[in-house]
Length: 108
Figure 1 (cartoon, helix red, strand yellow):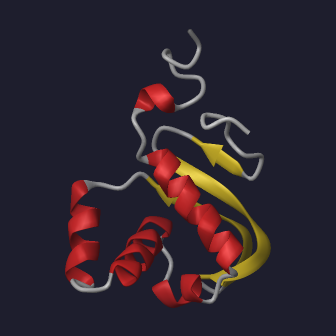
Figure 2 (figure 1 turned 45 degrees about the vertical axis):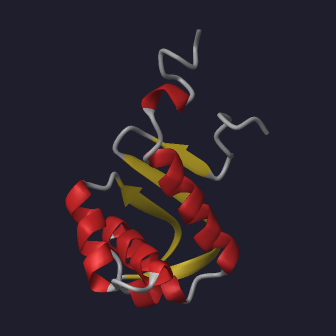
């Protein structure tokens, strides 16, 4: 897979990313097999850093939970493979637009 190719388990848009999980999780009392992260704002990042100033892993967990609108404890119980998918989705979401497939740069 090339660096710009989107994996089959990921759906990427300008304002969100949806990740298909390998194992369903409970999110807000509902069993789901996908999770979506909305695009973060600077405020989201600042709040996540303030909630756990000396713990980068907790900052990430808090940020992803906020973006997915779930409790951090719900993400804490995910399989690591699925959490890695969320991380990959997040990093695709915050990349420069010209690196996204389908953008003007990628179609040249």
